[in-house]
Image (cartoon, rainbow, N blue to C red; front, side, top):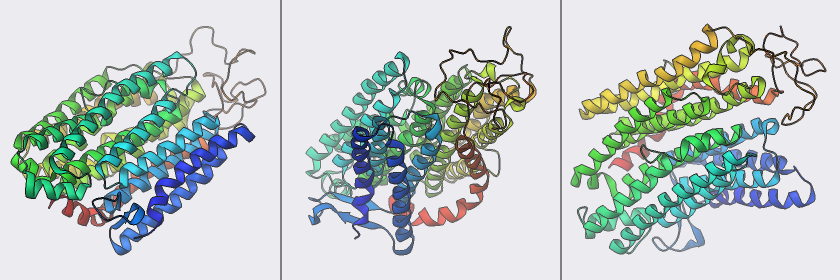
Length: 525
């Protein structure tokens, strides 16, 4: 037991309060508070992951009350992966947000609160406290989605609030059924009581499983319970879209897998084969529908949002297989999707900031206009497709191999076809970027009007290579395509580093698989 475990949850929550209080003294001081808190969180979670590697799983009971009465926090190979992913991603997006914004102290307070909620979801061993952290995460996310100026983000946040509340209520109802049937809320204790005393075919347990899974399906955005996601991602500020697309559904998907296999266990799926079949069916529909809807989008951020619906379908497919290889693939895909999809939103933000392009049609000739941003976006898109040897390929490979091992040929066909479906919507984007010429709209001179409302109101505007423009805000490039606002070095650096990691981390998956294999084995035993 180590006292560092509860600090991993408390640190970002305390930093959130500090950011709000700092705003009373000095406005726009929140970024520096968030930076200190995020760096400390990365260091803390990395140390906890190191201890898991060295000594095995860490268990901490709050207040030293005995289990199942005390609130248990558990860090093993899988939860260590999640908390490090949350901390590192939050720090990376924070570096991007330094210039891209939003910049208010309440924004950074909600930002840090989200990190705390996601960390708590990742390590709690108590089902009710999972609900508490799920609600903290939801409340912070609603605020962040609505932080963009204008009515669109407010409407998207309201829709997210309404749908998210329904999902959380269903999840809480499922917890209630489980508690009535067992008299406990500790996950490990729940599994023991269900298996030994209540039985896997008991009506209350089946009802609990159904409500918990459907509630988490809403949070993961599995089709057709995804309706909140596209507008939330598209309407939020670019930095917020990246953060929530990378982490919120990812940690919710992790919670789904953890609850299914820690609370209900493999034995429940064997006793109720219909449950596993419904998981597989939901996964297949989500992959196909999400991909088809992504192809139909003209707005890039909405296309990326529907892509997430399809990609999380793959994770649910892996969960339905109850196979060790597929489960490792699910977690590789969770990590890879978080990094790649979050970075794709950031890359789209770089493009929009520099050129104003936010629709697929406006990406014509982007390779010449903005080579660094366009190149990073293309690499990340190919990684999402699953081109070897990228991280996206390895995750899909493990999941497909798990389907082969279990003889799930129909699901294997869906998993393999997901690559072609993903290529369908990313190929048209890449084709416009590199194989079409930019045609400037009639009357476009490259000079911004004097009264232009430029976020950040910078005096220096970057050209397509991140270099300064002249004093009139006109790109010092060839002038054929005007660039609207400045893109900082930090914004470029985050997306370029992410693109490099998407390619190089594929080789590290085998070492990661060895790290999580003992936890996955226990999860499926």
